[in-house]
Length: 114
Ligand SMILES: [Cu+2]
Image 1 (cartoon, helix red, strand yellow):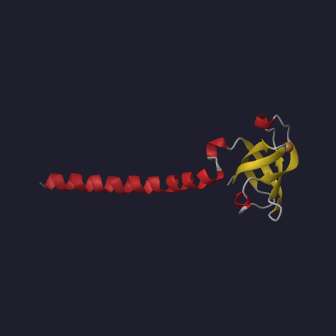
Image 2 (image 1 turned 90 degrees about the vertical axis):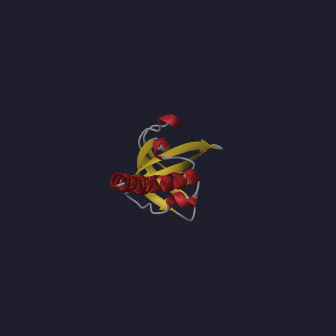
Image 3 (image 1 turned 60 degrees about the vertical axis):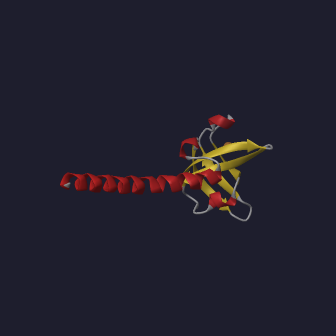
């Protein structure tokens, strides 16, 4: 009887820990589902040179973009969603994914590197 109580307590404790650990990644996944990409899809690295929230554009100094066959350079990208620019400022190091859409280069996901 006593042993059963301990096992129940362990099971409940274990469940609580599992739940606590799963809570953040679930939120994280939901957040990124909106931007259409998760961290593993952030293909490129760069540095924010300018953020133009009114125009929904960000200027990035980026390394080679292998998916776009583009060498390293500094250029402006349109943001697929203006919310992607939230919290970004000049000088931030970022990982991002850019795609070509209708002839324009668009950032579809971007994340600051801490
Ligand atoms: Cu470029």
